[in-house]
Length: 338
Ligand SMILES: Nc1ncnc2c1ncn2[C@@H]1O[C@H](COP(=O)(O)OP(=O)(O)OP(=O)(O)O)[C@@H](O)[C@H]1O
Image (cartoon, rainbow, N blue to C red):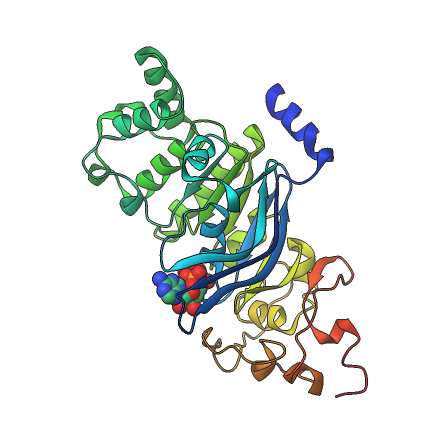
């Protein structure tokens, strides 16, 4: 059942997206910089679940951490805006970010073991998170901490436990409890279930989805698991070499991928919706982002390469049901050049 305050929040959707990333560029280093995020634009609506997939090193995590403003040296945001709830995150100071991080948006990382403090009990960590934002009585802290653990299926007895005393699945759940304690509008998740076995992974994803429906928060979710995104995400962004090459409704992208890279990526996984077919990979490997190829980043590996692809970078265009596709097959620039 959706709570009234959630309904009210969802009702605001008409006023615009919750998160709007515009032309974001992120680089690592100054000499021969690695451009890990290259002119990425993306919107996330309230209550929406967006999956981000792509081969290792294509910039998925960098994009998430840039949005969350958690990048550290040598990474830097070179240009672009990240509008979240009316704030341009790129320009907020650390003190301003501390005000909204955890309360309005939160981040769940791949390994809770790295994110949780090993020398504090789960209860103490929840307490610290709450006290950082609000003056809360000891009783309220206890009640809210117990509720937070129950929400993610952990017995509140574990408020006394230290991270090493919990299983991997429980630690990830504890991380999610912490991420949800203030009922944020956006939860950013970087492969939160990848360290878990398949059964624990499914059960945690089901729980995240239930909580998302109940509280109405939006999710930005990076994963390598196509099966997970196919079941849980509303829209899917496919990244290649620092760029989003295709973005659309998950079902549309799975049923009719437009970009040749999306086609190759989906053919590398067993079909989730369609009939059984032989799996093929994508020949070659992703480019070195210090020296990306000219023109379309994917042209050296593309089975549908045209002359124009070697030199001219494709603009993002809307095709059919997709929100955007970055490929000359659809820009019109390649007409007659094959
Ligand atoms: N600290 C760093 N210094 C220099 N380059 C980096 C650094 N961290 C990441 N990169 C580069 O940035 C690019 C994007 O990395 P990122 O971790 O965002 O990719 P990813 O798609 O999340 O990969 P994975 O799926 O393996 O986690 C890669 O080419 C990587 O080599």
